[in-house]
View 1 (cartoon, rainbow, N blue to C red):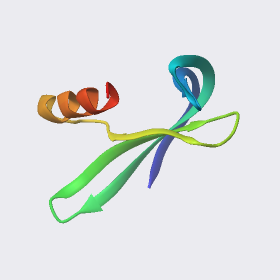
View 2 (spheres, rainbow, N blue to C red; view 1 turned 90 degrees about the vertical axis):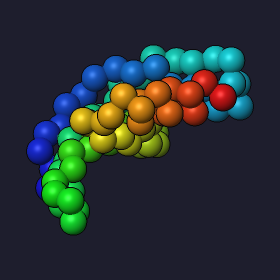
View 3 (cartoon, helix red, strand yellow; view 1 turned 45 degrees about the vertical axis):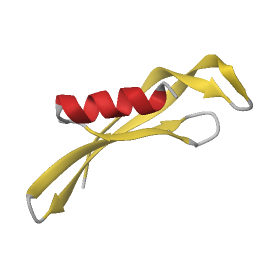
View 4 (cartoon, rainbow, N blue to C red; view 1 turned 60 degrees about the horizontal axis):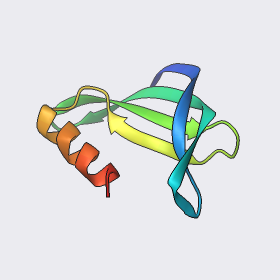
Length: 75
């Protein structure tokens, strides 16, 4: 179930140029999924220029999960 939509700005990688980034408008879409352990809130971010996915992460994530995401994005 979608719980909120708003447009903000975000920094995204430039395709084929790993050392470059650009500031683009992004649709942030908050939604809830129901799992066996209960509801999980997510945020989907879509590049408003080309519709590409910028990110999709749980809104309330553990510090360990955030660290893993940060480490993965730094590679």
